[in-house]
Length: 187
Image (cartoon, rainbow, N blue to C red; front, side, top):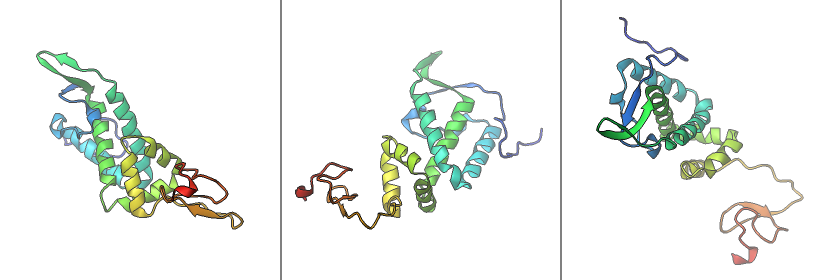
């Protein structure tokens, strides 16, 4: 039999099987590679390379990892013989491994400028990530490192001041910061 060669959008290369893992995958730890068969590893690595080469799909990958984490968190501990753990399908673990690796690789220093550009290009998704406890600090760090979100042009008739607490701009006519609620006199 010829060795498996990855082609984009290939279906999962094997029949799904159930795999028992000692800790839930929602804990954030990478899935050990030894649980996969060789052709599954080639498929996983091919998908990772394909996704990393396309920055426009990175935020979609982040959304998918959050969805998969939610699904994984709903799993209950099970018993197989004398072993206890969490049972997942091999296909679920393969997709989780792909999404986790891509998310981790987008945070590498070489990829952060492209990731920050994607955050700026998609402000709605960025706000969702900023509101999630799993991704909030990472998104804030990437944006702070790259200079923050793009700001809209301010009409010249309105004057804005910067809040001394959160650093965001708000109208001078407002008595409090519209972002954090700090009073103007509390500087």
